[in-house]
Amino acid sequence: MVRWPVFLLVGLGLSVGACGVFTSPNNGVMCTMEFRYGLAVYVKDSVTAAPAASGATLIARDGAWADTVSFAAGNASLDGLGLNTAGERAGTYTLTVRKAGYRDWVKSGVVVTADECHVHPVALTALLVPSTP
Image (cartoon, rainbow, N blue to C red; front, side, top):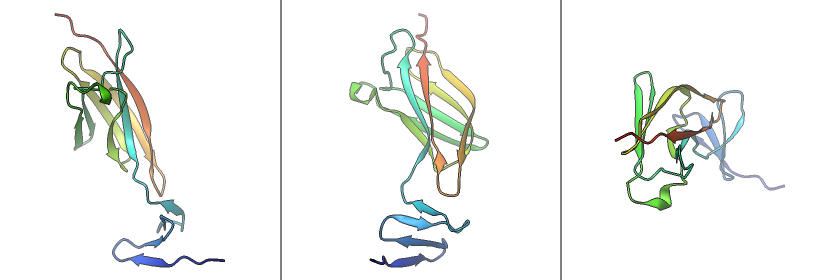
């Protein structure tokens, strides 16, 4: 049996092993060291259903907390990717997606939960409606 060295991270109260897990101070649960985003929003055109993240901006709000994430316009290789935010942050969010040529997409009451290790990610699709000229 191989025993991995365990180090104490002072100030955090966490034990970390060489295999990339740590022991949570809450009930001794073994957690991974990965970082998880609480929200992933995939942007699509509501008419064509084509991915449309290039040039889109996501604004996520939970009370006084807010974050804005954008993809630069003109890079179609980004279109299939999600706009990610709320890294390891549980909460109840109002999401707004903005993109030139489209109406704002708004979704309220999006709940991200967490356990003693990580958030439970929520993935949504924002179907953007073209704005009328």
